[in-house]
Length: 171
Image (cartoon, rainbow, N blue to C red; front, side, top):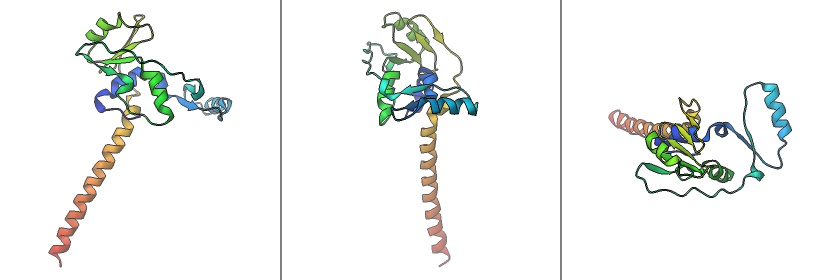
């Protein structure tokens, strides 16, 4: 899952528990996964069967300069994760602030959520989920890895150029 840094907190909050979910297909035995989780005692997770994922029609965007977009359109996912992201984030609007969230949530379908850039989640039934989301680092890891790889590449180039200069000085 690739998420622009500006949206990491919002996407992490919008996903909630499914952020740490395990996907399994018809060839996997959920009982084995459950037994492992039970024996390992390392915590809880959500198991999502790929075959049960049903396409979800994306929410229609309203005209409002404070609405950034539909969450599923703001991330990149490949393979089987693409359909999961559509299901999990296709009914989520990302907005700039909570004032906008409170204004628009009343007029949205019951299945819709609105999330702010700070990670506050508003649901159409009046529930608000707020506070620091500790799982946002899970979303940022791919970006951080790429940033580090790019930095290593840049440093390797500087090293090679410096080595050339040293070699020319001593030859």
